[in-house]
Length: 416
Image (tube, rainbow, N blue to C red; front, top):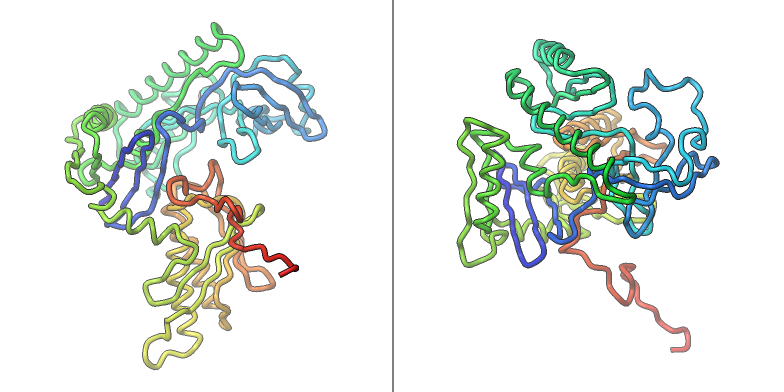
C-alpha cells in the first residue's frame, strides 16, 4: 500500500510518497513558482551554433532554453537521416518553434527543450508525431504486451505515437481510448494557441506536482491520499474520479493540531534521510557528497560487527547489501541525478560483488526515473547513472551556509 502525504504551508506544497510507511519519494513546489518540466512554449530561436549542434531558444524565462539537434530530428529513429545534418539546416535565428521542456533549468543553465512532443495521461503517453507504438517493459506477461501493442496500432492515427503505460496491463479498450481522446484534444489546443499567440508564450502547463504523482502512481482500491487542505482534497477526489472511474477514491483530510508530516512520521524520516550521513539498519552507515560533476557515496561498517561466527567477508558483504537497498531508496527520495560513484567496502569474492550490484540494480527497478548500473571500475568503485530532470529535492531542508557556501570549512588567517 502507498500513502501520499500532502503538506500545504504558506506558499510551499510538499508531498511525500510512503510505501509500507517508509518515505521513497519527496517533492516540493512553491505554489507561485510551478516547475517548467513538461510545459509547452512557443519560442523564438535566438542563435544557432553549428559547432555545438545546438540552438538557444527564447521561451520567456530568465535563461534561454537549449535545443540540441537530436531533439529537432524526427522522434522515430528509423525515420532519421543516416547522416546527421547540421543544426543550421534545421533552424534559423528568428524562427518560431513549439518546444516542450525536457529538463528544468539547473543553476546557471537554462531549460533543455525538445520538439519530440509528449503528453502523459493515466493509461498512455501520447506523442503526436512519433509514428510508433511501444509498450512499457514493466508489463511482464507477453499476452498483455501483445494485446496492448495491437490495440495501440488500432487506435493511433497517421503519424501519432503511443506508449502504453504499466498501469494499463489489465485495462479495457474503452478507458485507454478515452484517455487518448483527451490527450488529442490537449494537443489540438496547444497548436491552436501557437497559431494565435506571439513568441515567447506559454502554451500548456502540466498538472501540479501532486496531481502528476497521483496520475502516475495511484493504485485504485489500495492507495490513499492524505492532505491537510480541504479544498485540495475535493480537487484530488474529482481528479481520481476522472482517471479511475468506478473506484471510490481514498482521499482524507488531516485535521490534527501538529503538522501532518509530524503526525505521519514524515518529518522525522526526512530529517534523517537528507543528512550527509545516513545510518543503515545493522549499524553501518553511508555518506553522500556532491560535487559539480557527480555524486559520491561512501559505505562504512560503522557499528556493525556481524552475527556471531561471521567472517570479515560476510560482515562486509551484509553491510554492502543493506547499503545497496538504502542507496537506491535515497537516490529516489532525494532525486539524485547524473553520475553516481559508490565506494562499497572492499569484498574479496567476485560472487559477492556481483550480488551487491544485482541487489542495487533490482532495487532501482522500483524507481520511476531511469537509472543504470554501469559496473565496477578497476579501483573497485561501482558506477551508475540516473536521469536528471530537475535539481535535487532538498528545497525545504538544505540551505548552503552563507559564510562557507556549503564547503563546511573555516578560513584561518596565516597571521594568527
